[in-house]
Length: 471
Image (cartoon, rainbow, N blue to C red; front, side, top):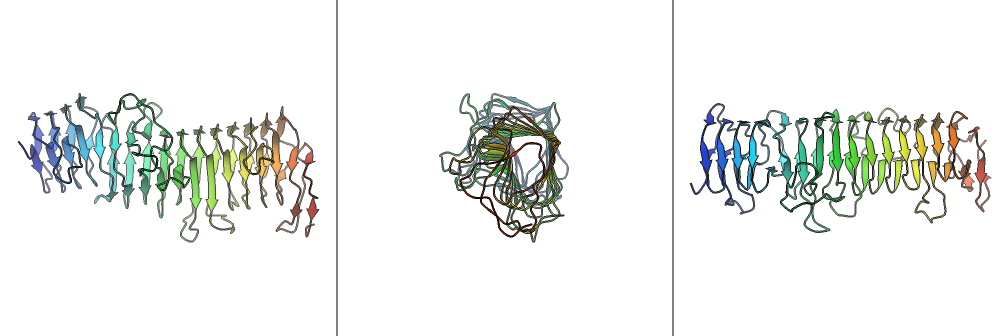
């Protein structure tokens, strides 16, 4: 049939397509749209290779699930289609891995990115046994839904056509619950990443590249987000190709990241970007038991738009994580943070520093192993690398950490201080001292305390150490 096989165009709350042979019907075998949600069971759906008439841009598919449809899909054979299944925006399906996919040009579910706002307020991405493949230049924008992603789901994003092409972001304005398992993690990766889900984009054997897609962005009033046993890789690109982004960008309410792997992204691993403090709900960000490594920027960075304290608003906990081999640095708390904890982490080989606190950010830093920071930072290439850098007007609490094989274990920049004692250990650092950048010091508290860290303070600058208006 030239126009298509079976087209269920309006609401259908019950109905069944079963045991049928549906083949060579131009753009689709079955198309469900506008709340049409039949049971599709035990069919053979094959040889749908013609392009659809609408703009001639959307690909042919064995089954097209259109706006707000929710069919049940079981035990079908999809063979020799351009795509076995295609989702249009606001589509979803009750689907499992009982279906078979044989010799389709792309063994993936093609997804048309756009604004999604399901009428049920809940959107579930079930595991079809093949990847979901996002090729649009539009963002995948979840507006007012609680979005669930089942274990084993693979999200793949088409790489841009050029170095300045558009990338896809996932924008979440309510909640995202993505709970994988150790056996069946959830993947967010490049379509060129053939190590998972095979050759999705039809380009032959390939591997992903950092910046092939954008980020997951928790935005506005988004809260109660959970990522567990998820892998985020080959993303992090900004839309304008100059903006640095984390592959996971948190700019809203409470979020938990547990047992996740964040790697090979072009810029930051996790970006805590709290720019609108007046609208910000209480934000309890927890990153635990996760690996954040080999990213092109910082492993984790936090920024805010104000020097006002964020106590009671933003209290991140970074616990029992591996943060390593990130080019720009490990953890960078760049703006005010009056509460927060970095504990029991292994932080190693992150270029110029393992942890950096700057501009009034003062977390508690407990029980970490911070090692192998030997590269000098970019700023004038004069200041040495250090396991921990205390920048302008910070006052972190530092206890029970092990600093090992760093150029310096700790570096102070001007107006820095710390609540530090001799519970920390210093092993095989090139210099077992705290490097202090001399300059004018004028603490806002009017009091500056030099506590005993168990190693010397080491002054190397040609400038005087000038205490202006402090006790």
